[in-house]
Length: 108
Image (cartoon, rainbow, N blue to C red; front, side, top):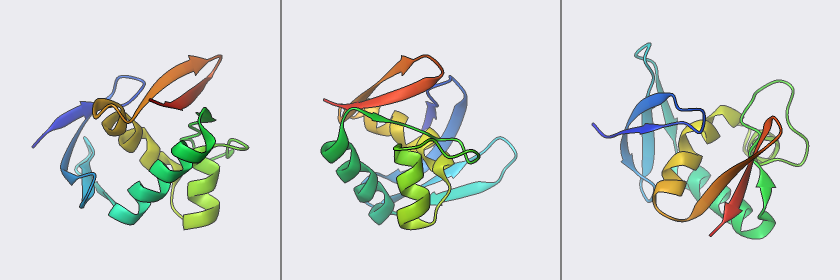
């Protein structure tokens, strides 16, 4: 099973693909599914809004961030971005910078 790291450096295992959808396995054994439609939505948001705040925390939602859009538009946890953004970065789709306490996603 492939392994990657969050933007804060925490390792995670995953299966699947960005095109087909992902399953992320946490250290606890819990699995999180990220659908292909969700991945497409996030990629479109990055294309449209770059640079944009990542906002992967659940509470409070970061205003005008990808996380806020994922929660309000899709009803999903912004924490999926902790796994999705590094994988998008690995493919060269985007890059991430840090601004104060926030991570900012830039389209390449």
